[in-house]
Image (cartoon, rainbow, N blue to C red):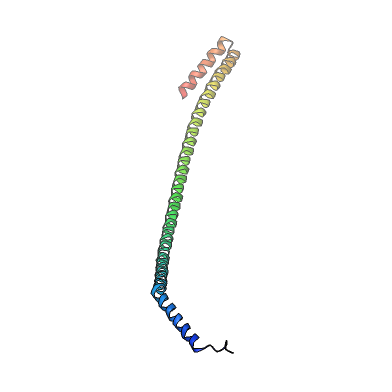
Length: 164
């Protein structure tokens, strides 16, 4: 039973050893341990503060990025509108130019047709006149082979001229 209940001397020496250990630890170990704990605590606080600042900066950057994206979208939409408008103007100008060219070609073709028509009519008139003269000459040669027939025909023509 002696092991279960220590003696008073043993308790005294254990207390003395504990106090010496406590004194040595407080003199040499507690200050460095507490300093390291304080240093660690301050570095953790700095890291948290830095993380909070970084988080704020990220929020600001994200807001800035969203604003830039919105501006880029607006600019893209404006460029698309401008491009569409320009394409429409170019298309309209090309259509008008094509219409003018078509009208000019139609007018030129009409003038060409008219000049060819006049030339053809003049040619037909010339051919008709030539054929008429040839036919009249042949008819007159047949009918007016005698001198009396020629004189009577000439008198008839002169009378017709006088009446007109």
